Length: 231
Image 1 (tube, rainbow, N blue to C red):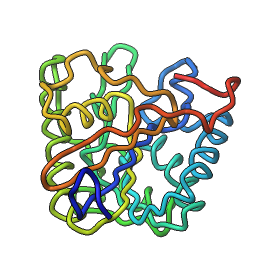
Image 2 (cartoon, rainbow, N blue to C red):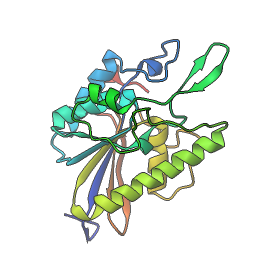
Image 3 (cartoon, helix red, strand yellow):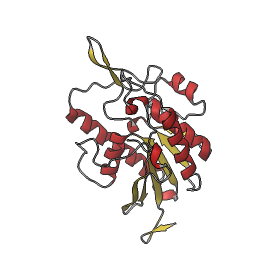
């Protein structure tokens, strides 16, 4: 495969998760919101739109709304899911507790993820106690971690996929997805949370070679009828 005169091009597809109950505005906000019925429809439609792209590897965040989205897509593409912890959303896993403020929670455990997805491929940093053990106090620390996570995932892609003409997809979030796109193009860390805005199940496609990175499209949502487009 050639792109811009270069062989060994990796085509990378970034997909935001489907609508969650938090996205819909349900109260109280929960740490690990499931998809809504609309979010499930969005995920199915995203999978159908990608089934002829020749995708060979599917990564996902360890958070429930992404696991559910990736499950629909993986079933359609007939691919297992590979969890990469650094694809998690800004702020990690948290919820407001009466009288206790914002509580950081550990996230899903290995066994809980396997109950949801028996064929999921888990890294060592998903433990029997969970995967989120950070504490944050301000936006600056979240921005820094999101950027570091993005750089680490890009290094993983370059180490394992760039020289192999693969087509790789990752299901992630609005904030961390924006941070990832920023890092791919060597932009400063995304301090606004949404430099690159993405609708639920919006798809972005980026070509990556050892020499250059090129954006084909950002936040493609033509797989969604207007009545099921959400942010």
